Image 1: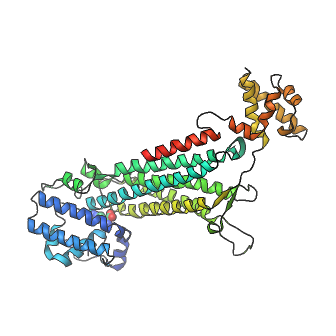
Image 2: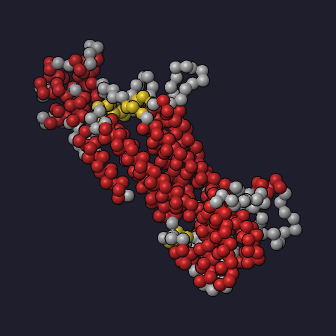
Image 3: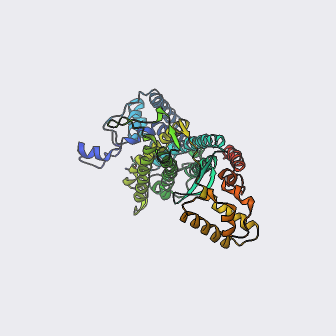
Length: 452
Ligand code: ARG
């Protein structure tokens, strides 16, 4: 059913009708009914509709709601969108009174509301899911508080650290990704109902009342803004995109670590896939798909931005396209988070010793502790590494004589620094990689999650 036949002699043919309709909004059905219910209640409270009409409309909406909950609501190909479908069904159930549902309301403020109700709930779910994911990472990190591994810059070994520290970096990112959804959720929680098609209505509506009924924290300030803006949905897609990119970075490391070259992770059978051609293969497809889907979400974000760019105020039909972008971004993140939790649960992390050269900063800092300027200490250790390299020896094989000829301030005690485990214990700076710091970070993170 279309809601606008009056001023037309002919209607779009089947092909064009199909082109203009959008079935992706069917998942807004429950929110659309809730919005209509609040609207009808307000129309009754303000005296815009008579008691009998309100009762009849509410009964009809309740019946439609039961059909929706029971999965019995039937859409028709002739419904232009979810709003038209509900109104059509209301006509079938209560007759001509259904024509009063749209008093002081346009599909423009209606669809804006539906998307806000949907994403408000989705933001809560993603917030929760990301917090749970961060806790999973923190738990694994805690069990690897003492596991010494190299840290990297430029994908070259940098300093010794602990695997717990490395995994906690991802956990902290996930905490921020979660908190970002909470922030976006606050900006989404504003009711646009009452904005009308563009510039309000001459009827004495009460937008505060509908917002209250829907449990929304705020009400729009400007009707054109309320029906014509989608920045809150773009922000939502950004939240999804950023969280996906964070997942993708860990996924990439898992792919790398699972190679025989790195040998730092073994993936369980249930999270590995085989090759149809190569019998020996164990492929990390789950991590690769998370990485691949992060690319798709970044594309959705670009589409969301471009959708708004150059749009004159207020509502334009282009905005119908926002739904698919938001739904796809949200669905992809939700599924990817679930997949990553399973993947992490079935991944065995294999410690691989850092190369001894990663102790070079500890050697330099030891000189700094004796009053040598850092730049001079850096130069001396650099020369030591170069000399040993020229003799095909590693830092591990350095003798006290080698150290002292690199810098006179070295002494016997510095030889223990060549053990990465010692080096890690000394990494006591706040937020650093020592086992102690890992334990502190885990409890800080748990506290932050409880309060966010
Ligand atoms: N299906 C439309 C959308 O999603 C609803 C609003 C239609 N408004 C209009 N003036 N044609 O954007």
